[in-house]
Image (cartoon, rainbow, N blue to C red; front, side):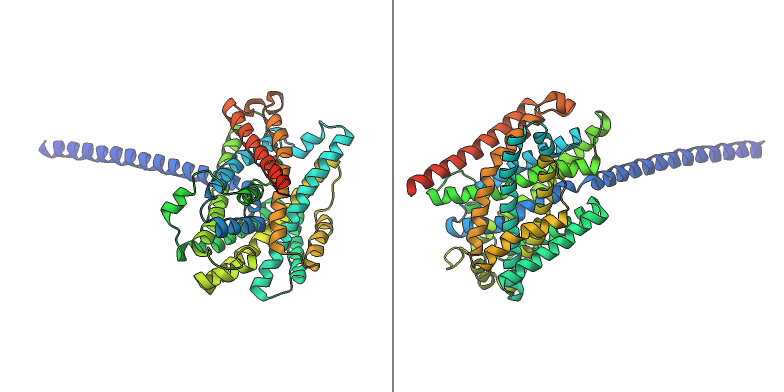
Length: 442
């Protein structure tokens, strides 16, 4: 009897243990499934990133290097606020462009072209093409200067090499599709970041001076000119046209519903991360110039800035600077040529082979290098041209993304529209101030 009771108790205990183990196993299994789902969601979100990183390359191109170094070397931390405002503005603009392509399945140039008559469409294409050419000019020159700094190659030869390498990068996009192209460009973006962030660890800037540079102000017409160039180099019109095509080509036309909302959310993350990286690199350039190059002679040119960086911060930082500039030129010239093709296809309704376009648009840059024009001056001037092209891309972008019939549930809200128009108004006003100042100074 006693043994029987003990047996019953033993069986009951065993049953309780099995039930307990089963519950624990179920809990562990549930936790494992939950963790697996979380990993899949995270991996899936990461897989959706990419288009904004291609766009971000345009925000750290050789034109940015020239303008940011000049701003830091001449005015110290005075214009830090310009980069912060420009980067935040770029994030808003790039998000709107990406959202437009995702929601409509069309690029911005296609949508603008479909709403204009023949003569208006041609005129609009001419200004957009001028912007693309100014971009291309700056990027090829930047690559040539980097090759000169690294290997002492003549600028003309460096320009040819930069053009040939950009052809190879475009061949990846032509033959293997957008995803491999995105990976290559993102890799180059990381090289750019390392190249230009390295100097901050050798010559850390003064936190108090950086904070003072966040207060908006100018110091004469030259600082306005530089601020306009920095703005044009940061909020790049050609890549605003391009980003809509990048999301269109990656995702196609996504019907309204949960899937589109998920992709729009992933696009927002993509833009935020990419713009944060690009903005950090731009600010780093200015801070290195402000903390390490003020008082040095010849820093108004990239070559002089490189020599000053090498002398002040060491040869290793000088090499990283040149490598970052080279990666910037090679990546951004490929992206710029891609943007030019999208602009032409959307506005002229003619598809031009990317490689053929690259070969043709390389010619003006090579001519500039051959006649011995100051590369840095050309770079800064090209960024001012880009700034003047911004209203022509921002106004139609805002009008289209505020059209409920076109955008559906992804139409701009009141806050987004207000911010967008404020950005456009500020850029237009800055350009007007620059024109008036230049005319009255002549």
